[in-house]
Length: 157
Image 1 (spheres, rainbow, N blue to C red):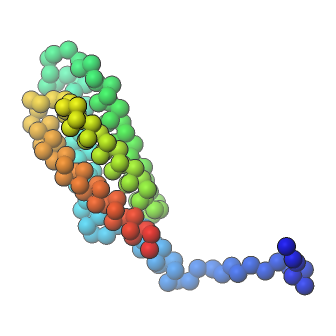
Image 2: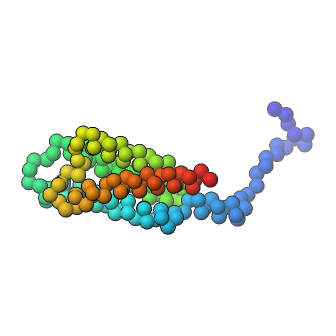
Image 3: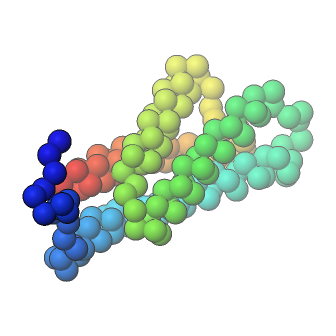
């Protein structure tokens, strides 16, 4: 590799212009539709956490603990971790597309597993909140997949 004649290396580094900074900031801001989807997903996650807390408190069930409670706890933990990481990335105005894709992939895999194994991940069928969560699960999954595709397309431009 050659050296410049004057002995100093030259790099084409220039500070970002106002337009470039605004574009980068705008890429990491949520659109109105994404804010709506985020609010819906946040409500879904909060309801799932509430259902899980009720399950372990034993308020709505008098029977023995379900042997698959570790599976339910693991799924709820993953959902909370994904939601927390996505929220942190949004608050820091950093790209969050890959995290949303990972959350959508995990949710799709658990949905397919529940469908094929015929095991419901909503483990309190007598609770009205479980019925609502079970009915809204396909909508949750579709919104998460749509948000992942939309966010990746925004971040790729």
